[in-house]
Amino acid sequence: MNASAAPRSFSALRHPGFRKFFICAWLAMTADVIEHVISYYVIFQKFHSPALGGIAVVSHWAPFLALSVYTGGLAERFDIRRVIQAGMVLFVGVSLAWSWVFLSGDAQVWHALVLLIVHGLAGVIWNPAAQLLLHEIVPREELPSAVRSAASARYLGMLVGPGIGGILFLALGAVEGIIINACLYLPMIVWMWRAPYGPRHRPRGAAPQRSVRGFGEVIATLRVIRENPILLSMTLLVGAASMLIGNAYQAQMPGFALDLGHGEQSVAYSALLSADALGALTAGIVLESRGLLAARPRTAFLLALIWCVALGGFALAHQYLLVLGLLAVAGFVELSFNSMAQALVQLNAPPAVRPRVIGVFTMASLGMRLFSGLTIGVLGAAIGIHWSLALSAAALFLLCCMLGRRFAPASR
Image (cartoon, rainbow, N blue to C red; front, side, top):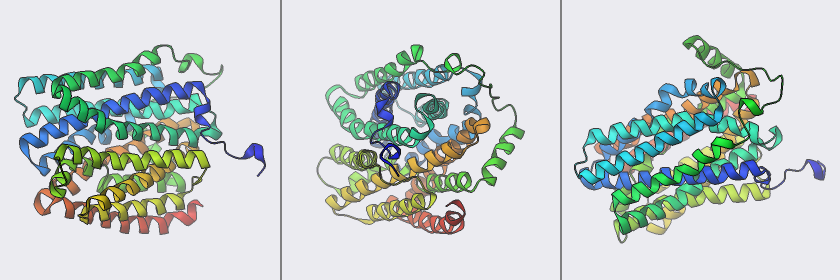
């Protein structure tokens, strides 16, 4: 490979449009995390229920499971910028609604469930559109860098979000903190008004694509995925990871922090969330700067296995520093295998059905997290969250071994 063909470090960030997208996405994800930090903490303090934490995860991800394939087609039918703006406006509305619930001082379970569902609806509207927007911002050869950098923006938000959320909560209270949080969605809304993307800015003669108009087209998209080993293996991998673990353990972090008994619970809670995010952000910086871990199905499966071991160790460990270290490792490999799987899907999806394929992938990677609320949260109410997470990690480890043995050779 000659020097010109070698991958450049942080290649996506060399594009001015992607830099603006990165900043706006980072702020939006920071707001997302702050909202969860404050709302999950208030819910836990009021109800002290692992089952409710699991139900909260189910409610949040249900829209992704039900609607991802269809919302993936919204960017075909409408201006992609307006789709992203619609998702951001819903996020703002949810934050303001949380402030009203906190101000009333009478938070009920149904309040949390409704707001989490609407929050999930906002995510399922903007997430597939944001993935498709990457194709318009960077050239195809730099798409893996864009996917990984965009994932890094999400984890950067997860890294700084707990700290900012904790400061806002302690200094201003839940009501004022969540109102300030709503303002962090505004930069993406404003930038999308004039960003040079969407139908008007595509090359002349580009064929318009059809949005999903019926269940038959969903079945046709699933057939396309089934016939491509890379698309199928990566979709199954992220689907299995989301179904058994997902991010449900993050909703239980107040409980893990309480069980560790290390100092102030709110500080320990923020530290656990930050350790996971710091590991992921480190992965984004290291892998981008060194051009490491080329996107391959076999590598994605190996990284997923390491994730299972790290989370299983975190669930059963009791030493505070060891717990933080295992969470950092988990964050590192989670960003690595998830961004790798997404890049492989985006690169191998046929252009004519790419939005729908990405919609299916989003349903698997995010919508299947609905079930992790049951495997970790609801089951955790019966046997304890430590054992529910450990058993889920063990089950995923075995499933990844079987999937890797079945698909990695065919996808090489």
